[in-house]
Amino acid sequence: MAKLFILLQHILPQHGLSALMHKLARCKTPWVKNAIIKTIIKQFGVNMSEAVEPNPEAYETFNAFFTRELRDDVRPLERGRKTIACPVDGAISQIGNIENGEIFQAKGKSFNLSALLGNDELTSEFEDGQFTTIYLSPKDYHRIHFPIGGTLKKMVHVPGELFSVNQTTVEAIDELFARNERVIAFFDTPAGPMAMVMVGAIFVSSIETVWYGEVTPPRHNQIRSWVYNDKKLKYKKNDEMARFNMGSTVVLLYGKDNVAWAEDLTAGDTVRLGQVIGNITK
Image (cartoon, rainbow, N blue to C red; front, side, top):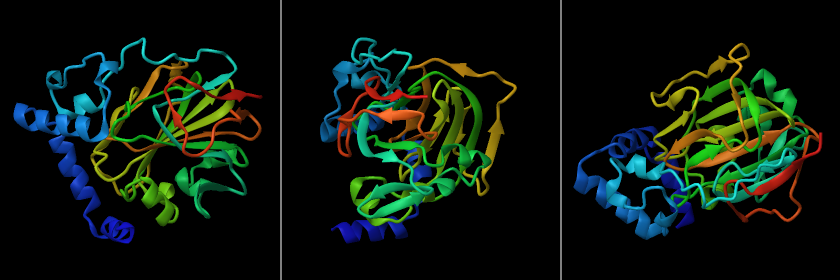
């Protein structure tokens, strides 16, 4: 079954299916969107009691449900000046150090740091630094928040494939996170340079940020970048940063020796928005 699943990843029209999902996720026809929402809640065990709006039928579209807001009291947000707060609800895929320009993916596989960042000139700031890769499942909260405060420097959109990012695919497809479409945001922070990489996947119909809106779609064939050095776009720890309109993966990067991950965290651990995942050592 795993081999068949991987084969389908290669032959399916990934971008066509994602474009279809983009339309379906915004369908306002009550019986259509309600049926999809209830199916997802049942299949993945979504905890609607945590949402500001717990009634599934109250959401105008499936996408509104998928990017639902959480109640203020359901996540104890870490606010310390020297701590790194988890930016999402999800599960740690991998966590550790960037070694010789490579980031560990799974079972002997790795992906290239420069390729992940679209061969951007800022790549050197993260050589031999720290990374964590966090996977968001369909049941998770799909807004992304700032793990520490920071000032936006640059955003890059790298077009690419849209392979699934579940564990089966991560273990089977080389350079997965550097092959899939992604949006990268670079920041100056109290912990030095920080990059948040939002990785797309099949059925991830769009990625949007609070400063730009929907970055993708539409689809593009070339890398695009936006420089914000003169804009002074400053954000506080735990502020909302972006949204996955359908879920995927976040790769969080810091520079060499600037942070230390919490010693009790390891691959496979469930994490929640706002919990401490590391400390600033700079």
